[in-house]
Image 1 (cartoon, rainbow, N blue to C red):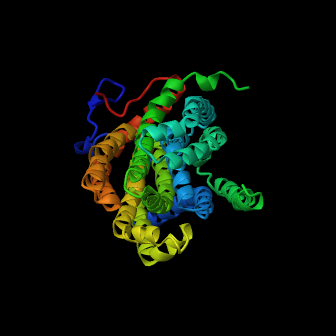
Image 2: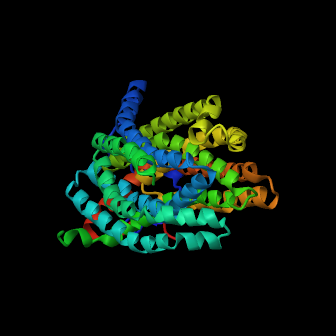
Image 3: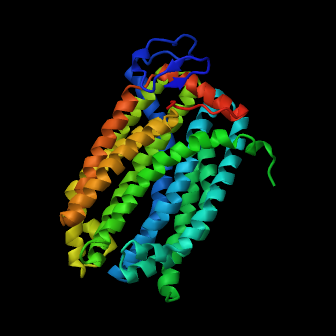
Amino acid sequence: MESTGGGEQAPLLDYHYKDDGSKGFQDEPPTSTSEMIIEAKSQLELGVPVILMGLLDYSVQLISVAFVGSLGPIHLAGAAMGASFANVFGFAMLEGLAGGMETSGGQANGKGEHHLLGYLLQRGQFILTMFCLPIALLYLQAAWVLRHWGQDEEIAELSGEYVVYLIPGLFATALFLPVAKFLQVQEVTKPLAVVSCVVLAFHGPLCWLYIYGLDQPWPTAPFANVGAFLGLAIPACAMTSLEWWVWEIIQIMAGWLPHPEIAVSAMTISFQTIALCYMPPLGLGTAASIRVSNELGAQRPDKTRMAVKVAFILAAVTGGLFAVALWLGRYQWAAFFIGPSEAMVVNTFVGLVTVLTILIFLTAMSASLGGVLRGSGQQWAGSLVNNAALYGISLPLAYLLGIRLETGLQGIWWGMLIGVIFQFVGQFYLTANTNWEYQVSRALLTVSDNSAGVTSKSFEY
């Protein structure tokens, strides 16, 4: 249940409340297909640069892993395990915390409260930087942690070394992510893609150089309402980061299988494939979050509904295309990561493609629905769905099938798929039964909260 601000209690899924409170809103119900086409163009104009940014940023990691993979399976496994550790305990948390700006910033921009965006930017950078301090200390002990998690000694040492060199990037990410959200909620996305292009242009040559060429003061106002920012940032972190962690944890499980150099290498290719195919839907999810939060802030519930429908269609098309592309190019894609002499790794990955294609489609849909839930400030509800499905179903089944029943990577991935199905169903149910008129009233409270420091909860326990 949730308080609407005047003592009235409204349930989390108050879909029976569809026709109440519609008076005074500033939009009219969409009347033609042309309006949906216009909405699709708006989301694509926002989403394509975000997709490009995500693909380019992820290509940095992809190129790094590919270069390391050319040194041999043990180096590929070490780099992949190190990247997983860094993501689980660092970058995923920062990404999730920054997600709080999508709700509060988007709704503030929709309402026209532009002065709040600067405060949110500074709060975000301050909070994320503070989180980096304990994370960096943990990074320094990565090798010790991985050894105590039962990972191969040599892989753990290589992973620990890899993670230490990611510490400067951790702090840079803490400053960059709030800037990216600051621009995105104002529907400014093209400069971010340009910056990512520049970064990628330097990254590949520098990888070659180091691996082969060298043979080896703010005002006090932004801090006044940190609590209101954290009220949205922490559930956004729980919704995004905990979901991300699950995918990284299964890489650790791969290290417990026989012949870990083969299992971890094949898992790395699988994970990198899932993650790369997730970037475009994630960009579309960000666009959906921006459109939903802006329309809610502007008090247009009917246009919010249309934005949600368009986002769902775009995600389905994108996920389907990537799934088909992977199936058709599975052998060529595996060869990108590992040489032809490593036939065991290639064959192991190819055997996983069936389950991976299904996962790619479902995670694309989940990315879109997650963006809708973030944009409407329903992070807590989304987090509960994600955690119940992934931690309550996916991980236990992955461990049971893959480790205990000794079915290997096949069991791990099929266990993940079952949980992702439940995740998609839960997110779809939340989105389909959302009362958008009521969410408009919550959006107004959210904007007010960031001005006055009063926390607006998505529901009460």
